[in-house]
Length: 280
Image 1: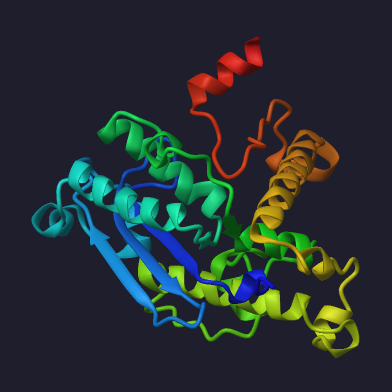
Image 2: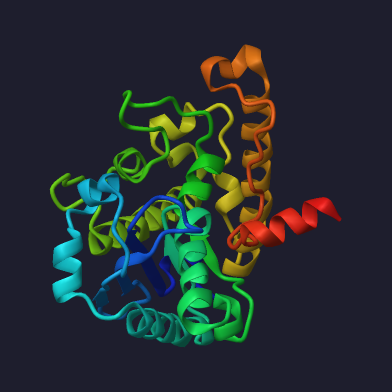
């Protein structure tokens, strides 16, 4: 019998980048950490020279300056090729990729970088579609929905909030480094899986108090089935958010009557492809 998804070997993936738009950002650092499965943890990291000036906000988050990346980072085409080769080995072996917002940002960032530097899409280079992705942001929104913001600066489903919700210690000095964030996402996935596979009445009190409580939707599924469920959950969340933005009474100062939130997960079309599809 196959072990539950949360105790299987996982490849935790995280990037720090030059800006927050996956379509235009360049990779600065990457961490790929193999955990679980009864095998010792294996960590690989990369530092790249993005080749373009980074946004000041991005530098403030990860602390790597343009000058440092230029001096110590490898050429982007070399770094992207090494990263995707390492990921391809895990995907070919059936190891799921796990990360926080990995389908909303990280995999799309890597996909654009593959096209930019290697001349093919991520799935084209992998020679197979991604079918085993675990996104802890998607899982958290599904299992524990409608969480309120922690503060003006800490959102309800950002990495720190998710980590602390599931009882993980948080070190702000280490946070926003690719290695730390990747490992925290794997730990969060594991803890979500533990809760889902714990008999209902034995779950933590805060879980029992959730309305609605959807942890059973993470229970007794294969990684492939969980992947397929996340496609639908992500789409539903995106459609709900788009409707909220278009509603002036609810969105108020954030109201945007023409707001369009992409619904595809874990890879979305590049903007030109999306526009062509909307026009057809």
